[in-house]
Amino acid sequence: MAFKIIASQCTQCGACEFECPSGAIKFKGESYVVEPQKCTECQGEFDTQQCASVCPVPKTCVPA
Ligand code: SF4
Ligand code: SF4
Image 1 (spheres, rainbow, N blue to C red):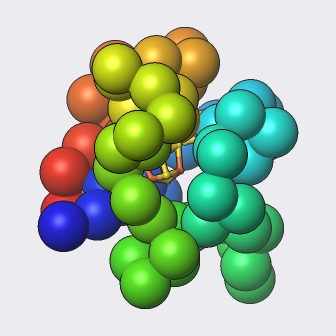
Image 2: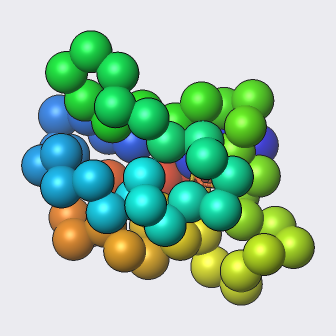
């Protein structure tokens, strides 16, 4: 399992990239994306998914 970013809702603020403990979020093309093979859902690091926690737009970082 991995999280994903709903590109059409993302404001490209970059907060999630900075907070991701797995380095799974990158700016690619015209939006931020989660590399699913790198996303750990923050298991073992945080109790909540950091991208979803810091994202200012509701329901933009969601389970893929
Ligand atoms: S769930 Fe955690 S590991 Fe996955 S992209 Fe979000 S911050 Fe990174
Ligand atoms: S924190 Fe949310 S709005 Fe900001 S870049 Fe990440 S997905 Fe987009």
